[in-house]
Image 1: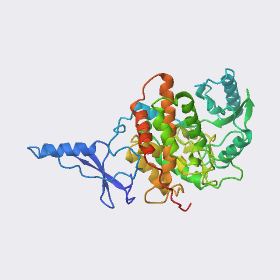
Image 2 (image 1 turned 90 degrees about the horizontal axis):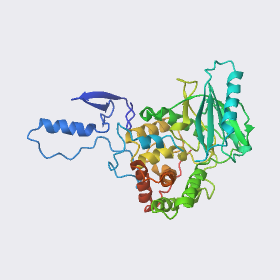
Image 3 (image 1 turned 120 degrees about the horizontal axis):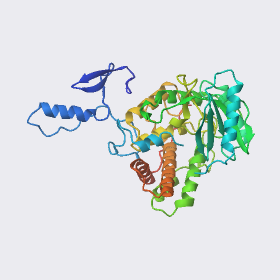
Image 4 (image 1 turned 60 degrees about the horizontal axis):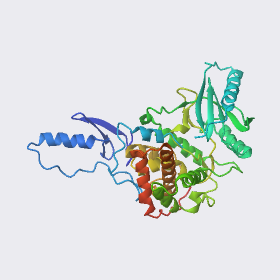
Length: 93
Length: 314
């Protein structure tokens, strides 16, 4: 895959069972749905006793969206198990 | 949903059968109805597909649209015959069969190929006399249907309010601001096939709404899905980046694409919501969460006037 920011190729790394894509150019990191949560969970397991959860770091800023768009992270309809109704919508006029 | 008149499907099947056997290609000989909707009935026989276009389709307009597909086989699936036939009062065209996107595996959607084909289409000079792209007309039809059946229902209110925020051209009440760019007019994942089947390159199908107009309309369904929180940012980014990479003129080459996308994405969100509300009411059921997400987007946009499109070089 290509870096959406600088277009350089991205390489996949495995960090504790979590696949992350890192850009060979700008070193930016791309996380798939749920991967940030997995990393945060792993980190919490390492630093016992668990500290209060840190504020979620931004991986990539989400691509621009219109003001009327869904609140960022508000709708959780997408992900690896795509909703059947949305699957139908993708193919409808 | 209106079923096609009874004799149409067997007649279409017969046409497809005759056309399939008229060519030297081997024919596995099976007939299947691929679609039977008010906006088109499609029957496959072996490697040939016969399509009955919607009632009321103008022969001159259809001929112009077919000619575009015939002349640009690298972008659009070319028809087998240059002119439509008249069958039971419907215009019928014949096409080679192509393998569609697997509806059970939308994660395998060819976003890059779709974007690349649209960019090429938008950069193709439109022939003289081609009618306007029908996107805004289709949106207006969905709203008219919603008004007929459900104007007083609470679920229709945010849809109609959001429709009222749109400029006249997006409601098909005025000419589009672009009258020269070649557009598909009805892009979704059902409009892509691999030809030759099963592993050939992707091509766009369905020229019924093709014409000149605002090319951002063709990006606006994915944009609307992304804005409504349905399409993941990664897939939207892949689609948009591939379109830009291929030199597509609908959005500026970099920076915020939304000044160009806002109006068409609103229109397609409203159209999708109108169809969803009408469908749910007809079935006597509540909206599902995906339909609700689109309705919520209408609710939010009703409070926000559209962004002004930037004038960017084409």
